[in-house]
Image (cartoon, rainbow, N blue to C red):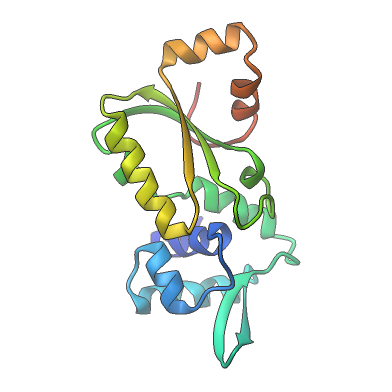
Length: 176
């Protein structure tokens, strides 16, 4: 398990559309101040999950995809997505990441982050707006697929391929 600040920096490094990132860019993407972001980067670098490279006269950081623990760090980045603010005031029962970014090293710079959100969502517009803000910090569009529990059960009964694919993704929160 990572501390909260290390988890936020790991998520920023692993999922940000652009990379490698400077410490200042990591701080912005993670929502941390510069010093805690730098400290978290140092922790991830000591653990071999992040590597520092020198580009155009400055230090930048990127995931170490050659490290055997990279798939675990990537999975943790998904599970540790800072979704609490986006879900504030909502009754979210489960969240799954699916699609190309649900796989370590998957996707491209242009890939969006697909999330299946199951819950009793009272204010979809606010939820989507908050997810857009989080996506902007990561340089990615977050594409929510929102289902009420009844809709999920109906989709499961009819073997909806989209829902089955989403449920086969990475469970971030809850269970169904």
